[in-house]
Amino acid sequence: MRILLFSGKGGVGKTSVAAATAIRLAESGRRTLVMSVDPAHSLGDSFDIGGGLFHGKTSEPIQAADRLFLQEVNINHEIKHYWADISAYISSLLRTAGLSGVEADELAIFPGMEELSAMMYVNQFRKSAEFDIMVLDCAPTAESLRFVSLPTTLDWYMKHIFNFQRGFLKAVRPIAKRVAPVELPPDRYFANIQELFDKIQGIDAVLEDPEITSIRLVTNAEKMVLRETQRAFVYFSLHGLTVDSIIVNRLVPPEVSDPFFEGWRQSQASIVGEIEEYFAPVPVRRVPMFRREVVGYERLRELADTLYEPGEDPAAVTRKSTPFEFVREGGRYEVRMDIPFAEKAEIGLFKKDDELVVEIGTIRRHVGLPTTMAGLEPAKARLDGRKLVIEMSQGK
Image (cartoon, rainbow, N blue to C red; front, side, top):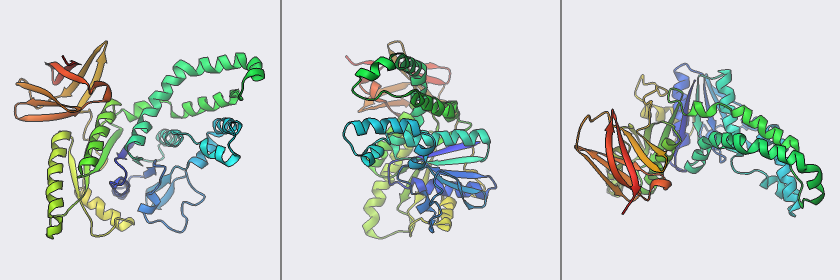
């Protein structure tokens, strides 16, 4: 199975790009599921599905075309089926605090529930081999990062806190019930957590395997959007996921000659140049602005024809490693970069804001730094085989 995640800043067109990709894959003969992980679902709208096709069937794959299935994860459905004990306990605490029943039920839907529910479906379909390819239309960038980090976070909690917390409360519950100002979680609350963890176990290795999972970042040629795309690239790399393409959407097409758009064209050309320089060697795809809104199956097919060359396989594995990785060994931080383009060369290093700029001959690479390393300066560098290892330290 292949899993393709489409992420990007809200409003850049990632749902349309994900849907178009799914159409191309289904038409190539593979059973394809495109799933919306965004709480503000727009997948059905993108396909212009009316008549209440999703009504009453949320969280179940709906067939939209031959070998093409759609799914929108609905948290209210998930709570009833998977989160019942956890949600009931949180809701009871909120009612104790004075909230009405409806308010308590609404607030009992806490951040991460929807993403974790989607993760369970991904793992379930992976194990059942019901589909050949899964295309995930992710939430805006911040929520997407939480989505991919959840397995690691939950695994740490289960290994280091869960058993102690469950055992401790089981021991003190008879006494604590008489003195605690709030209701303590029952054991079925912990059993519910264990059940949820079992359903996603192993998904972290799947997400980090480039033979299975690839990230596609959708962006626009605008400075503010580009900055968020750069940060997303850094943090997906930090989590060990492979970004295999950048898709620049809604470019002013060359046939538009109206002077009104000339300023936009020049600005977009400049930013596309920045994008190609920053993300190299990750390929950058360019998608023009369409004359009409890209809604409905046929318009999405047109978008697919623009995105992919005839005969091109959108699910092909084109990258198997991240261009760089961040490592902490003891008190030392390192940035490690693949440099297949240089064996021995003069290396230039300098910081620009929160970016590390590496120059090797005439080639320049920009590396956005995570928050923990943004205040450090490049101290020294060495070539280790086909990797450039840059040691970072506090500036003088």
